Length: 405
Ligand code: TTP
Ligand code: MG
Image 1 (cartoon, protein in one colour):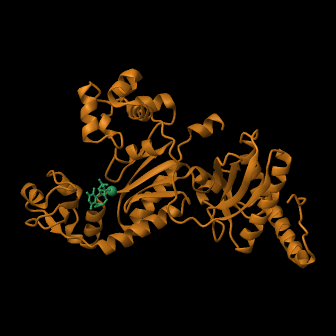
Image 2 (cartoon, helix red, strand yellow; image 1 turned 180 degrees about the vertical axis):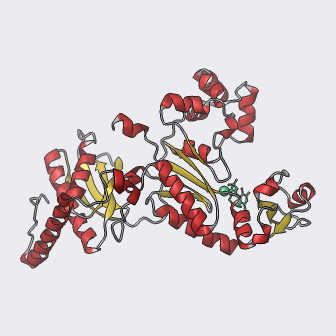
Image 3 (cartoon, rainbow, N blue to C red; image 1 turned 45 degrees about the vertical axis):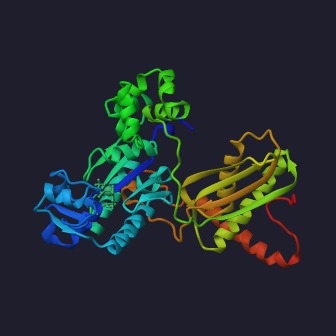
């Protein structure tokens, strides 16, 4: 990966502001600008689900007993809320997310991580995508969201909270700047450092993330144990390798092949890869879809299995793009051990080509303009499909690659 690519931000964390309360204020215009408290009634046993920012000024917050909320804010508007409506709005919010990337990981009904590394050519930088999402939510749903833009999930989540409500925050992308950005923050702003652990850290003199960066690792290990110490230390430097995990059942098309005898000859494996790519491409075109992501799966003789994927800046449906991308992924692997299984797949499926981003087409070489070469590849793949179907009845005839099975 080149340096600029490594340093580009591509992860967003989007979180709705005072979600349930904001929906209530939208539905009841007379409640706008007022303290709205969603949850149990002011005299009931039970807690607050959430409160509008106007109510938060009085100290009301989620999970607080409603009776206490009433004591702090007696003029507050208490409502039990409409959970069916929140679920509907939540689905609309996620539909907006999916316009920009297939890689969406919901954390709750009102927040998600989005991996937009592959969306740049279509929609602009991660920051611009964050702004487009906020605009769509504002204009289409009359609600506000806050967004964090960063190089990983930990930093994006931290950032989305920094300018709430209705804000967007970018985290620097260079490691040294990330370290400086984090240093003044309290340790409790590290996602997951809850009451007990935060107290323990304060007891040993660690109040800020900067303290955590500076304390000798051995000291940290002696207090917290190996695993927590290493984990916290990585986060303190803004390191987080977790991927955005799609949870909507992702439609994908894939083919795999298990070798009769574990195969060590890279050339043989490569030929199978090419053939699998054509099979996948054929199925993709038969389904009239385009794909934005190509996946490779490899299983070695010891059953260790890896999957690697690459998101493309152009939606594709031809064999050549699939196989070139798959081959790229394949050649990046350590190919010294025998391979037991190889699989190729495509995901991020689209029913039609995305519309070009008019702003980008003005200045950029627009990725959405299908290049002539690309169209040629598509035409050629379709011709091959036709030839394949014409000869299908003729037996085991395979085009493009020789039969290795
Ligand atoms: P949050 O995103 O935690 O809170 P929020 O959206 O109300 O406010 P903000 O993000 O601006 O700080 O939770 C989303 C919704 O989940 C919230 O509107 C209500 C519900 N919820 C509960 O029902 N109980 C809870 O304890 C929390 C934290 C949230
Ligand atoms: Mg929220």
